[in-house]
Image 1 (cartoon, rainbow, N blue to C red):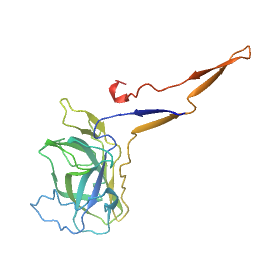
Image 2: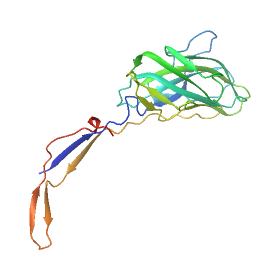
Image 3: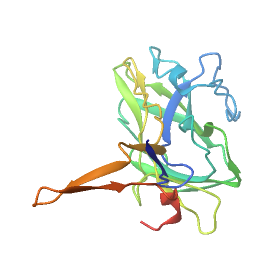
Length: 227
């Protein structure tokens, strides 16, 4: 006879485990005055293109990527960017949400911005920004996503008040060098514990023994408790 205990653990909000990445759709040609939201042409994080060996202007799509078993509800994101301003120049940029609150000087290196939506975004890949950039000197260099200088990198959901989930990792795009592509991994979910055997023998100092029947009477979810 086997005892079976199922425990469902829920740590973090609906955007837990999400990452942000940079990707180039090489079918696009930069044009002044055009928004490049919704033109990433990417369906799977693993297929993102994170390198360009060119001195032409490249459109970089910034996307939030969530684990396949997640149910994201993305209503806001705070993030920053880092790059060598002597090597890489930004010529244009734009948000892909409904509202943006940027630091003074954005998008200078190591500055930050925040983007929000009036309605939660539920896709596993959601574009939140685009940047048109080029290699100024033709040397190897990266554009690296990072946390916001004020408060770090976070996702917010559409609850009131919002639940914040820390951005799990950050991607980078490389000019004349490889970028970095940290695709999300599944988050801890249901854990099954098999209790074998269901009868435990306890030995007494006098040498006698007796059996104890072990039964699972109920199943509890850790989500029901405040931890």
